[in-house]
Length: 299
Image (tube, rainbow, N blue to C red; front, side):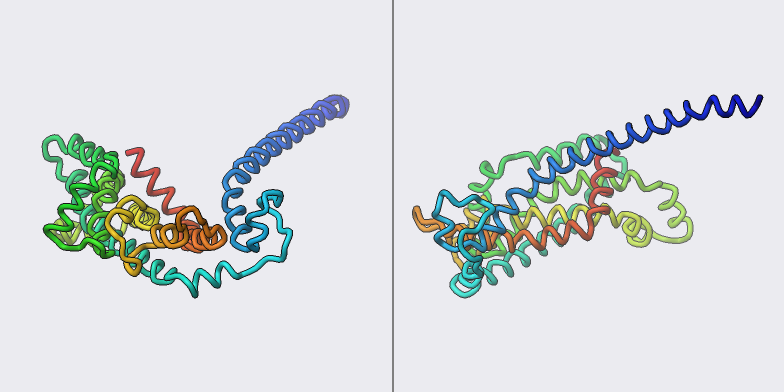
């Protein structure tokens, strides 16, 4: 009897298994189709950029040539021109210097400010933090005029890359303070208090306990500030005209666009090379970046 019951239920289990496999297969197909759609949208501009940087001049001006197709053999001439006939390496070095010092200054300013807002509990600390964040939303077009006056009259840094080192933290620091403030709130106060009971001062507790536990947040802030420093355009265009002091964003566009003549191959080659370090940076620290953004945002 028990065997008959078992035999009778076997087809039902088989149907349930088939239904589950069908549902899982359907969900998997929908997921991969959705991912492929967004992947194509995300990678299409980069693919066009890469292909254009290797096209010969005839293919660039031939409107019948598809964006992702070669009618003539690929060439490295645009990269050769970029390195031999322009100051691309100087612009790249300036960009790294500007972005590096932007990160350093941002961390020096943002860490103590965020810690004070998160831990010291003075009146209206949260409102003060929101006020700092709102300064990040002020359009740069409204600020470059007063900043120009300050840089030219008081610190005399106009037309040097150090002007950007001074200016960029004005828009990286507010967002980083807000982000770190949320991240510091996720660290249990008891951990810091235990360090102070063991004899640490507040500063020693910050250096030995809080900051090591905040590495994902600090990496997130560093990546965010470094990326903004690399891609900023308006301030760089306003404050620097000397070709030897320009970052990549200004150097490539100003020296490779002459009137109505666009050096598309060299422009695409420069943009592609400038984007590679950022892509590598995000690839290595993507997990920490997502963790830092999520923890800092939800607290």
